Length: 401
Image (cartoon, rainbow, N blue to C red):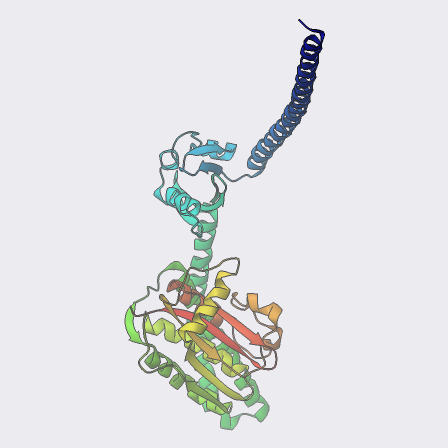
């Protein structure tokens, strides 16, 4: 073998060794990098496990901190966890379906609708002779359901309604007697002094206010207790508005006001004509009291504007699922003094009066009655107002179809 050939073999061998060493170095670098990646992944995994553990502990602590029963279900409505309050009710059956655990169609339906993404109002159901109100909130992987025992609230509400009804009934007789006595005295007004006549008028006004208060308390109690059923009829909205305006027209004329019925004559809906007339009468009476001059208009919103109003309601915390296919929106607009923005959320409360109204008489129950009647029709009532420019009250009534 020649020297040149030997040197060539040695050179090739060195070249191969160099290439192998380079590949080995790259493999070692990759192995080192892979080892670092594995360590990093292990640290991330440990961090994730710790976070999951903390979340699980927080969930359990939150559940136990709430005195109300709390149930967690997955997307298949299987019970995955619950707190001690739910366990004491006997509905904490992890791994079972919710309907098998609670034996309540209402609760299972609420969970299903919530998981499906449909906004749901709280629902009530009976369990162990107690009344519960259930609220469900959706989260990734299922829903959490909170139950509130409202049995005592229901009992207290019933006791309050019975008390108000009894008081209203007992006050009718003495108020009627007082009114008759005052009428008798006024018939003999020729024999009394002007000062006595003024006192008689004041007594008559106060007696009428008390009589109105008793009547409205009785009506409100009947509506709340369901003793005033709604007679849902296909009726002319235009005719109902006309009747309400006719009854209050003398009062409006004395105040120098004009009331306009801008409802289309062909407009019809599905509602209780007497009760909707009462809503309109209360709103018109309010408008007359607080409109020094100008005009009061009753109208129905066009579908496009009605949809915008309903979109505003949907954006509110309590929301609504009403659509323009379901309801008509009736408006009562005045050109009066308006209502401060901060007062608007409270105007439908019982006995609540805006400061500007304190000297205007009234019982503070008219709007509360209107609200209950509209809600008994499955609708909503609300108001928009600008100080010094007037107020518009809106309420919904079901469409005829």
